[in-house]
Image 1 (tube, rainbow, N blue to C red):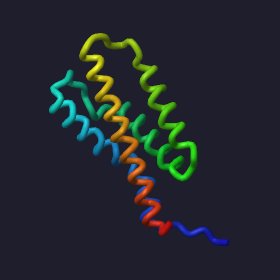
Image 2 (cartoon, helix red, strand yellow; image 1 turned 180 degrees about the vertical axis):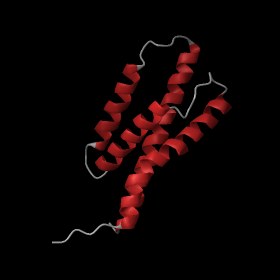
Image 3 (cartoon, rainbow, N blue to C red; image 1 turned 90 degrees about the vertical axis):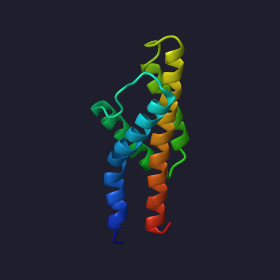
Length: 122
């Protein structure tokens, strides 16, 4: 049995997660601006690598039952990595913006996976 690849789906899986860095980063800049929170650079190299990796894994796990567990564990791990680094009201705002960023990143990856399913005719 020959395996055939839809070039659009392949391009979506290769280019989509890195593209999400710019889409999510620009949205986060806008959210931080409108919320008037402490300014933090939204387009840092570490954010590119971390977000791209989480979007690749999300797209790969989309067709399995493991995606909800991955999202829960991943968000908890990222929260734990930043635990107690900030205190006070700005820390609370930062945590909420952090969660919004996670929703946008995972939403972008799930949207890409849904688009890939549609393009592949499944």
